[in-house]
Image (tube, rainbow, N blue to C red; front, side, top):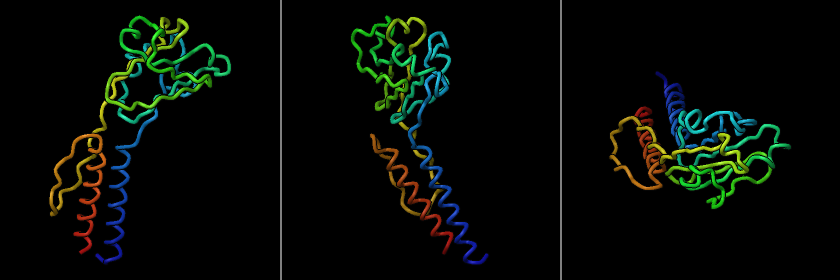
Amino acid sequence: MDISRRRLMVTVFIASSLIMMLQCCDAVRHNVGGTKNDGWIPNKMNYTSDWAAHEQFYVGDWLYWGYYEPRINRQLYSVFEVNKMDYDSCSTDHPLYNISRGGGRDVYQLNQSRPYYFISGGGFCWQGMKLTVFVQELPPAPAAAPSTGSYAAPSTGSSASLSASLSGIFSIFATAAALVV
């Protein structure tokens, strides 16, 4: 195989490997209820069992609440983060955070690995506008092909995915360098 064709194959291998590793660590925007414009409405579904149970939530992801006819419903519907007791009783008396900004499109970033509880005020919580999501740490980056270089021990903490990604990148370059030589 000539050297230019070999270099092209190595370049394609490196580029596709980098793309796969970067995709694993990107934050995801979840449209609450599954649709962008009318996901957060009364009596549509059980948001926790019918929608959230089928999603994977990771630290850094975003929740997006879209309202049907936002000009009309942005003043009716709201989103509050509450504790478990207020979630169970549909109470907005002591919200942890008022997510609603009145624009009819509310967003919230999931910054910690824990359960989150969200409800709508104005009595709409009793009509099914409540949601629980369980947020996990990012999964580790996919393992790279074995190389003849040294092995880096896995790291822990919030930089684990970055360290795993960098370790994987170095392994890919080591493998690619071995192929070119």
